[in-house]
Length: 119
Image 1: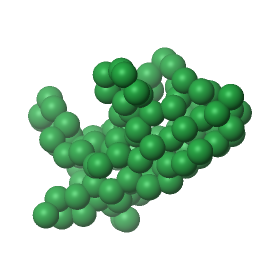
Image 2: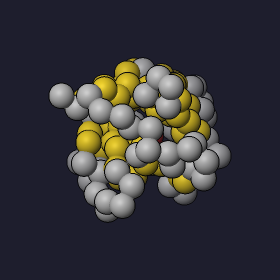
Image 3: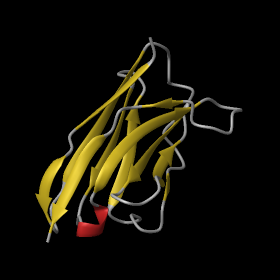
Image 4: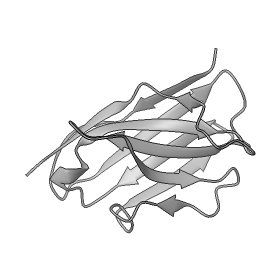
């Protein structure tokens, strides 16, 4: 059974930091593109960051560039999102996702972890 399980969400004050983690199981994700998305209340799910299979060439949404860092550890089948200088507008449920090379869609999704940033 393929699973992506996020953890690390919570309540933090504006300007604070959180580190989200995503543990993958059920198949080998080391050759997949991994990404983080988020869905704020009343808004559509949006892309946050992605990272290639080798860990190079991370790519970020403009809204988080310079504040969020995506990384992965293929030996542990995990991907992380370090978030600093958090803002109230970062409040959302954060989802981990995996996309196989050669495919356009992210086929695997976690259940999400909530992040709330208070002002």
